[in-house]
Length: 179
Image (tube, rainbow, N blue to C red; front, side):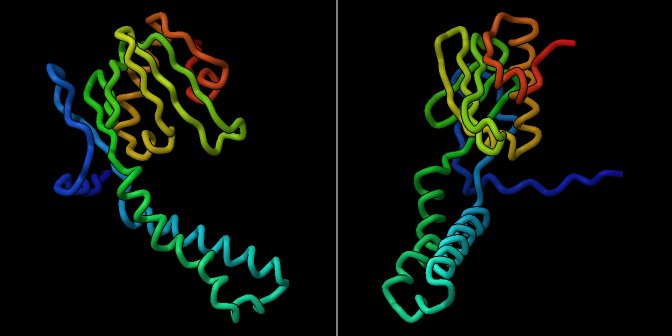
């Protein structure tokens, strides 16, 4: 039998509240400090490797000011993500909200995917019948599977049963073709 993992506490979370007159928040996502620290360590490791490749060795390590390029990402990257990028995402049965606003996921008029064709990083752009628009990194909304399920069901409904326009990338990446 599957066991459900404990949900992170919403005590310190910064995610949008439900829009006025809409149903409750069913799912939310906000990046965590540990993921930000790991990202900073990865950036620093890449810079360390590039410095070693540039000098074909470890000679550069004796020059103190070159460390100013390698070490700051470990501290600055998590701070940047936590204070400027991490406002969270929330969704209800028929809506998706970011700090910039919300959209009705079952009343979309346009669903487009922009970004890398290789599939690594792409942006989901959504417009609804009321003229509301949201642009979101796909990795952020997919980080919580239940959140993504709520959003994807609305997208799928809007495309297959509504009149939402899409681009070729949206059809391919989101598998929106009806069979």
